Image (cartoon, rainbow, N blue to C red):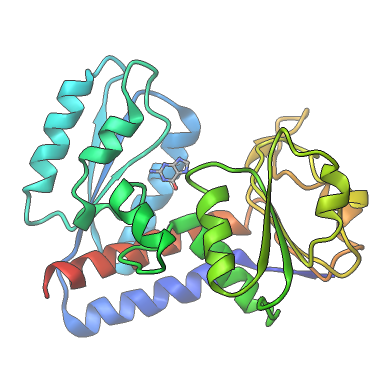
Amino acid sequence: MTLIDGKAVSAAVKERIRKEIEEKNLEIGLAVVIVGNDQASRVYVNNKKKACEICGIKSYEYALPEETTEYQLLKLIDDLNNDSRVNGILVQLPLPGHINEKEVIGYISPEKDVDAFNAVNVGKIMIGNYSFLPCTPAGVMELIHSTGTEISGKECVVIGRSNIVGKPMAMLLLHENATVTICHSKTANLKEVCARADILVSAVGRAGFVTADMVKAGAVVIDVGMNRNAEGKLCGDVDFENVKDKCSFITPVPGGVGPMTIAMLMENTLRAKKLQSL
Ligand code: GUN
């Protein structure tokens, strides 16, 4: 088994972006909006701001209180849509329950939607005409590519059908000619379906969900999960200790997919600047 080093791949992507921004002397801004006091979101937002600093992108943080109304948030997004210093807008999810996430995401100008969550960008992903890459799935593709594994013609199984990960993940694999199956909570024979996978991507959100009997010998295993186990330790969806000796490549948690999501966000922010300068 070989461990896939997401930190190293992510550092290389960020360095390439940093160099390009420096060489072209680009002024790029990313607005990072966070509402409420979710601790995990706070950590993600801090990591995104750090990545901006490394790449030479200016980050503008808007930390709003839990009781912010949907109208106030939409007003902020309207201002950011019209702010020429801001090339990309990121609204950290989840939002507090009283705010309609779909409404908010739909309000971000598609040209500044660096998460690629807006329906316009999701539609473009479906037809393979990318303005922005979906960050986590694109990061997973980079990690698979880094292993030298051929994707075309392979059986790929994605566990999870979220709009953020599962669905766009399946699309990216499909665009590279994989045979793709999406599994979810209603899937019958989950174990058998997963055990067919040459490449298995898990985005469930439950510690220990993917056990060794669900993994084909020699498979590439990508763990998108970000959970806490019974001892409060950060872990993915995969029972790492028992799966690691069965697969050819596996991503650790932390240090696998997480850093790649952020590197892809930086890539999208640079892309936003270029698209807006055409
Ligand atoms: N919450 C969980 N993942 C993400 C992400 O990739 N982007 C944003 N904005 N929020 C998230």
